[in-house]
Image (cartoon, rainbow, N blue to C red; front, side, top):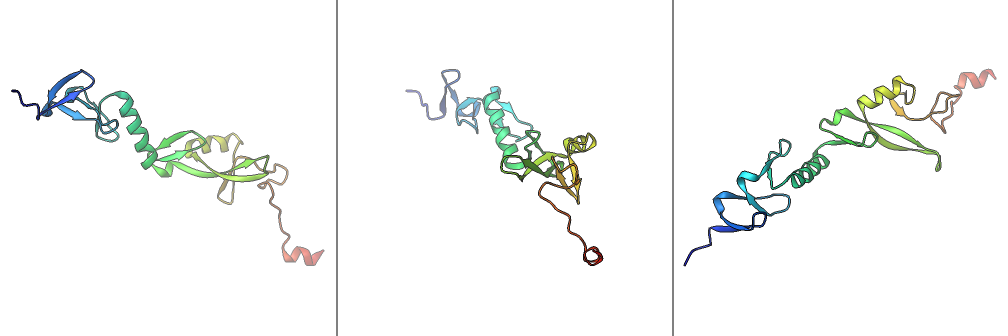
Length: 146
């Protein structure tokens, strides 16, 4: 009688293999031959296939990196992503959004985004050169002169 306690079934090859020769994928929890595992430089873990590796890396980015909504991309350094005010025409209000510093610089240089008092906007009232729904208040000295 053979002892199978030290062997596990590996679905991918439809065979039993010794425990020392297999690893469990952290993403799908399936056993795979250790020599066939895929290493992630990002998570520093091993996965059974490219699909599991991609899913694990995506989850890692979502959990640990900064996301730029404008660029639809994750950035390792959260300083590479800043918030801007995105104008929504239908409700006629601004909403907080994120953009990478590189994209923001490009958009400002091309006049598509604007910086006012250290805040960034994708649309402003061009005539007043202020964010929409913003009005200049007269100073008290100007009111007294009138």
